[in-house]
Amino acid sequence: MQATVEISLNPLSENYEQIVVEFIMRLKKYNGLRIDVNGLSTQIFGDYDRIMDILKTEMKRVFENEKALFHLKLCSGLQLPEKVAPSLRA
Image (tube, rainbow, N blue to C red; front, side, top):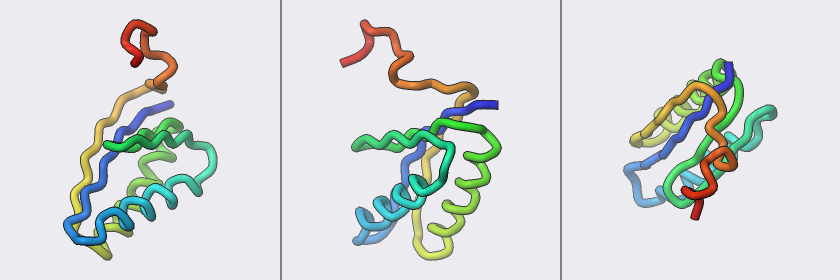
């Protein structure tokens, strides 16, 4: 099953930017996923089970080293930006 996840990481530390960048860079190392990044969140597109396995590993890694919050939205199917109606695009 294909899925879309929107995730935001909010580290509760002064070096929050470095923690977020490192998290995203680790996500980008996994094959078979599409990762889109913007100023507010990161979108992950791909196989549901693969995404959840990766997030389980990578989120745990953050929690073992930092105090942090994650915000997630999960949706079945690939909700790709290019599928949005043209009238809704910027």
